[in-house]
Length: 258
Image (cartoon, rainbow, N blue to C red; front, side, top):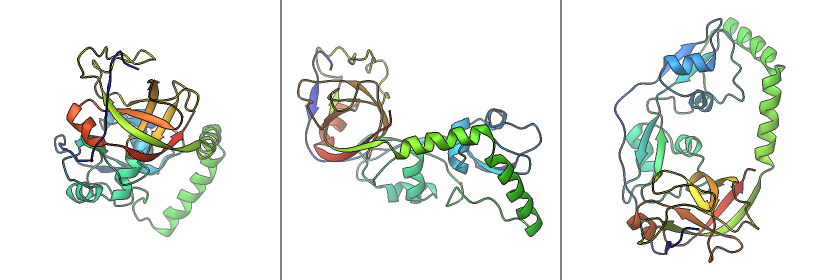
């Protein structure tokens, strides 16, 4: 792990901010459009468009309607819940969990959440169409299903479903202690990159470099180790010393993706 680290145990509390106001929109795919072009034109990311519209590949077709919204970041406040945050931004708890890969409603101090305001309550429904449009849509969708990229995406989905899930004892650590190098076992400089989502693991349980989903924390990289981190234990990097103390000790589920 770091030359010196602090592992903290206590109760959980929370913190919050959000970026400037921007609005969601629904666009109709035109001939020649790509997700990359649409993302660039609407100042967002390809992965955001895919997530909001539940696309399983980058393949889109003319006439398809896509919901597009700018990505905002929100830092959880003390005593806030996912329900509080959902109401504040007019979205649902399930949407926030999906956007941030959260397995439960558990959130910790200073957690940075991705929020897409003003999107539909499901983020899965397209706008209502006539019966004729619906039929055309289904025909186009059937054609898309046979596309090679669609097949590759399906294989990735099957891989995620087959991912290994374990229950761990989780604590938190920070690089702010005196004498801490701030460099993880795999070379990540967490002092220079305080927003890096990394965890310390026992490499015999979770291999170093693995991508994981940590319940209540989201996607992270197994980038560090520690003398006390043995067996089904993890240490979650949280940049704020106060927030790390408040994290305490928790039983969490970790899904190992690779």
